[in-house]
Amino acid sequence: MKKVLLTLAFMVTTMVASAQFYVGGGIGFGKSEINKVETTQFVLTPEAGYSINDNWTVGATLEVDWAKDTHTAFAINPYARYTFFKTGSFSFFADGCLELGTIKPDEGDSQFCWGIGVKPGIGYNFTEHLSIAAHIGWLGHRSYDDLGEETAISINGNDLSFSVYYSF
Image (cartoon, rainbow, N blue to C red; front, top):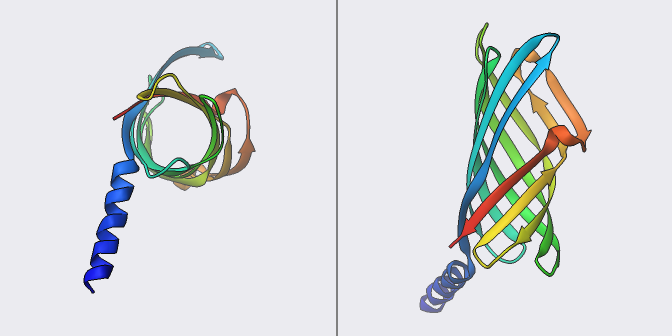
């Protein structure tokens, strides 16, 4: 029994010693005019995660999305990231993610939203502690309560996001 406990303690210590915590996220701001209706939108996406090893990372993003005269939305998006290719400072990855949130239109009732899918991405390490990542696209399913559902493979500018990370 003592050997089993020592082995487990060694495994946990090894995992923690090789792991890195990181914080970061993204911010977005935009103005648009469609059909003579002007909209201002602000999106804040703080993020935190834990690198288990060179290929696997787990984390979560908190998303706050406000669009003037349109809606307010909050979501938490936990994910597991698998890095499948690295070359130099570049890495290519896929995030398996779960999306859970609410959207409150300015007129009407709040709606529960959920989604499950994969987001491919590319990362670049500037230093050991500073990096950037871009997600490009979405493959999965989203449900918006009474507003409808969406099952999609999408690779376009609407699904492009950037995040900056600090690892410690």
